[in-house]
Image 1 (cartoon, rainbow, N blue to C red):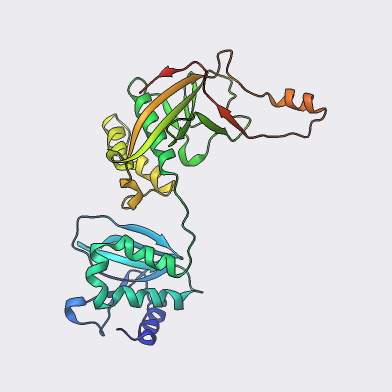
Image 2: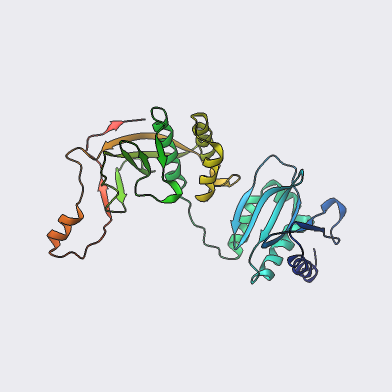
Length: 297
């Protein structure tokens, strides 16, 4: 095993070096060679990664990702956190240990999960199903329209804006109920026709993934660079494991909110009923059962 103090000293040294500088780690055997690498405002360690996969994982202020130095692909463990450099050195020592090299190359995500557990890192569930639902609706809209603006990471009032209407997307992985959460008094209100798309999904293998839906959108004319930039803003950049999580689309419904009969609450009327003007926003659970809809999928 590498000596922690030596590795820690090496990391402290490279933090003060020029950007894009790499130094070999002499204590490692040649067959397990690795480098200390410095980029602007970050430091890390890396070794060769001759594999077609793109890797990206974040945990306890540390990032593990694939990148290139010239033509050489590397698996790069790095951090920007100066205060927790001792913790990074502990993780880096394990990362560089020759005994772990084969395991990390074969299953880097499991290695990351082990460190998340060691440090008690709260594992936040990414709402992959919600994103897949929006991508599916985006694809369906693109089949007939091109004048579509996707709110995505900008957190706009409605998920999609078209020249003559707006679209809000709600999804569930429940196979039976049709409950949706309305998170703002503006989600069911607009100056132009408004549609609610309700998607029911099931987690299964070999169906719709973020990656496959991105390919669908690109084939329908969406610019790949701007789409990938949006994915990065949402936390789903290339290489992240969750992009291969698969869901079947059981159904997609479209509800015309602008038509009479769709339940909604006007904020002014709500304040009038309450006898004051102190209610400035609300959230509610809405059951869509019994309401007219158009089947999309």
